[in-house]
Length: 204
View 1 (cartoon, one colour):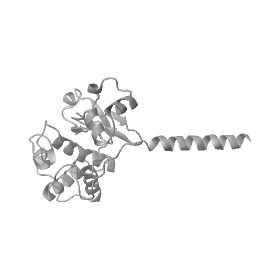
View 2: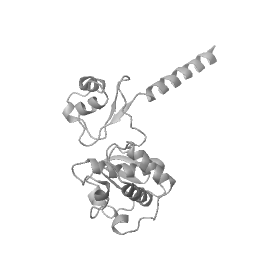
View 3: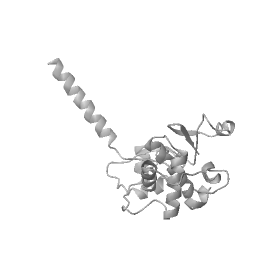
View 4: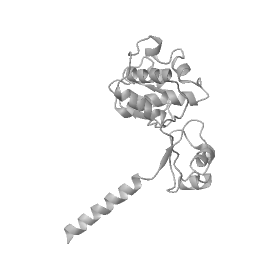
């Protein structure tokens, strides 16, 4: 009898964990407001605030993971759609940049690097095209020094494709660096780290 109860308890725990893990969430990005997020998902901003125990909607922090109600309408992209316009030349350049900057990182780490570039395009603090973001002086060493590989590989290509479809493991980061190799550790120490993935820290 005791063994049966243990098994039943384990099954209940398994199903409760599985159920919790399927709840949709949204990671707050630069420029987001609770109202804008609610419009995207077809829900009330008040319901979103109540669900996440937010007393002041104006104080939501970038990188915060918001729980969405089960009835939220999750946005979907057509297979050919991307979250920002991008030319074939820009996409090839981004794939090569990811291959250069995130060589040896996991797929998640490579998606994260691609997402940083796309987040910059969507931020008012940076140029509004992938090409211009990547060619900003002092930003991406492989681009400045013309040391990008001639082509990316299967993983860097998949990483860019997934970032272009909206995946962002960083939660809206605009910068990344390797704390073990950076030459400007004092500068990065002033920036809040919102996510660590592999060898990179991601920050705003």
